[in-house]
Image (cartoon, rainbow, N blue to C red):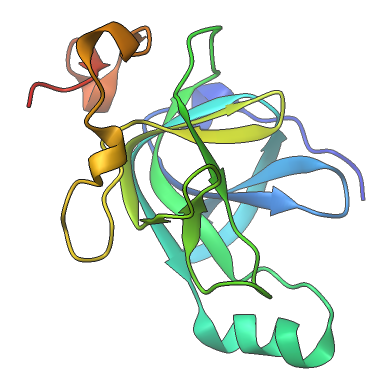
Length: 169
């Protein structure tokens, strides 16, 4: 499958869906075109804010039953632009055969939403404010100040000034 260049100027600031494309080795970005979600580009580096992770259980069950992957899980949020060298500390994972949730790869804790998602070199990370389904901040993310990651500065957050994390507690 060919890689479609991302038209950043058209989609920065828009609500998008982002998911791993197993056919071309990139992340596919979908945007709403005439009320239908369509792939608008492919990326290996991106920043998406205010992300909610969605899994269609019927699609997941079809993967398990047929042993053939399909698009049934994604992150949905505001596309901010390309990722810089700053980093988010939480590696995100998802395996439809193992669990019906997005997970912190290190701890196995469930992640339903995050303030910031970063795709860098085609690997996916989230900010330390990621929240479990019960709405509690996971204790693993309450790190001492010395262990806090560098701050990612994001501009054009919904047309306003700059936003940064870690967010104030």
